[in-house]
Length: 427
Ligand code: GLC
Image 1 (tube, rainbow, N blue to C red):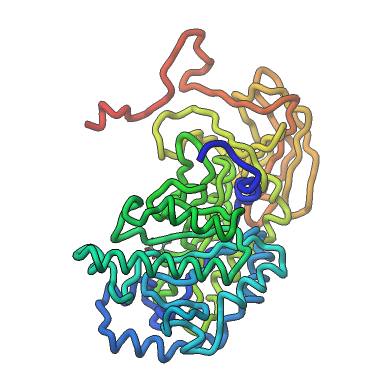
Image 2: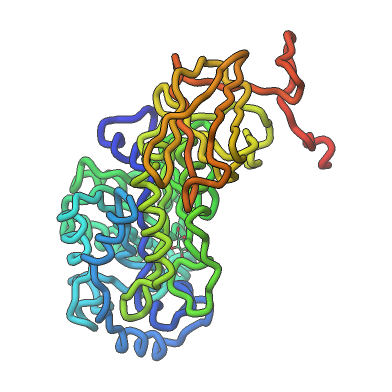
């Protein structure tokens, strides 16, 4: 996919969405790979489906949380690798309508639409319980043909029933590759039903956007992208996982995707009964309040890097107090480490015309001086003026650009970028 067409525009600006991993596995509380990792028998799988009781799955409340959290889109697992559909389907009894008399995808799509949220539907291509299954598809040509045909039928039905949605989010390419899945044809089929739809690349062809998982690296060269991240260490609910990220951790992730002109798809794993763990609710709400105060540094941002460091994947372009994002002529610093009464930024090649502090008390204009590419802001509070993270906005005369080298001035001759451990030293 080259360039950005009109249908991608909302996605390229969205920045923040909610991923929801929910299924029969949620009851056990050991993550969504449960039946594979623990090699469940047919009887065990059947028992899990029989006891599926999404009594507290409340699509309205989940979408309310997404809105309060400042998220612009939502993505629900309609079917994970275990093959259990959260929607009513004529193609299999292994679904929520059969076992719990609920079509959770329908409830979800209706609730999201009502709130103006964009809708993505996750759908696994891999299927552990299909007959024939993925392993059989590897071992025999006939099984493979049937396996693929059933996958196409599922996708066709899903996209026909939930029409329109905004994103089709494949997952679990295994056991086939893009050629074997006939990935291009799969996408054409999807677009013949929903011409405007965005499609990710997890069927083995490039698709409309990249989906880095559990890291926040923008594709290079840039193309539309979305990093999916867990809020603790699991996608599906795990009863023993208490490794929650803090609201500031989420803000740091948002800053990183905003500078790379990408999106953060942040996961929520409801419990077996469908209720969302309190920790997720609290963290997401807290970040939502921060976004209401400071969200202009995240939403709709432009790409911003300033090239101090060389190494890919390193926390490059570091600055003393926090990362930068940019929108038009405004440069933002997300001040995750508050320096006290004075804050200085050097290497800023564009004159600064005004400085504003975004914080718990609203917006405050600040005293500053700009000379020789350096802005010094004075008269700031000695303590951080925001419970999550204050933000400085530098409104510049032109599009802000920053450049620093590892020397005390920019050399007048061609020079290497900074790299503390060049790769030849790593060998
Ligand atoms: C992986 C995992 C899966 C999870 C997904 C989220 O493909 O198989 O469990 O749903 O990533 O991106």
